[in-house]
Length: 255
Image (cartoon, rainbow, N blue to C red; front, side):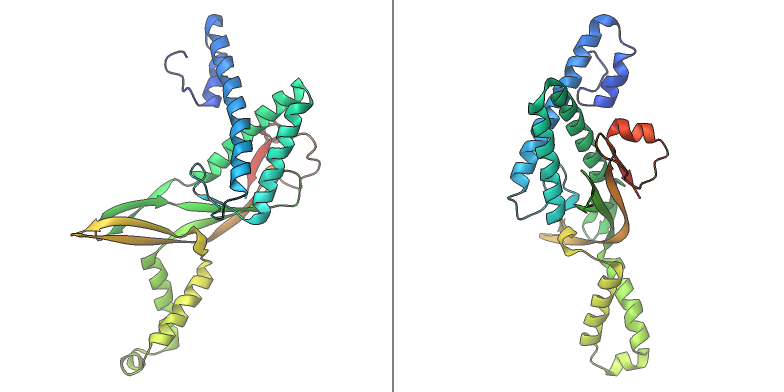
């Protein structure tokens, strides 16, 4: 591989084809084809193993959570591409390109927003700023998606405190058993934030001689769709600033 070109970045490889001398273009083109072949193989294996997991996350896509309908749609896409790959050489070429495009879109969602730092008694821990859930959207090869933003335990308690303070006066707090009211306020705060407990993260850290954990929750942020625009998509009822690019990339994220 020519020096300075990322071995696993297909976009950089495609750009390199147009600027490299002819004698090295074949090397880059071969690597692109390898990446597409690997993508199709990974997608099929991923869907096969994922369908039997009770925990709906995997290491590559640790910030994505597929509900049952989303997992079914994922399997449908893998089966469709695998079938296309056996129809003809043209079908196989398309299926490999589509698998790579689809995985790149999932990678984008998985890393959306980057990481954020949370201060703890033992120092700073890092957590994803967003996590994303996927459901079947009801149209070809597409998903409805919902972003959840990170909520620290401190933010959760501040929200509960604000609710609690509207229910009981400071004087009453001194003479009343408030445990039950606090639990109700905490539950209401979680409902208002839209916490989804399956996305909760525990980050362990050392504090003195003991090991403790910081709990980071995830609450509803905004929704959108992961929409397929390739062959057979038909009318998707979605807005694209660059429709040609959407068709070229096959999938696009809409908010």
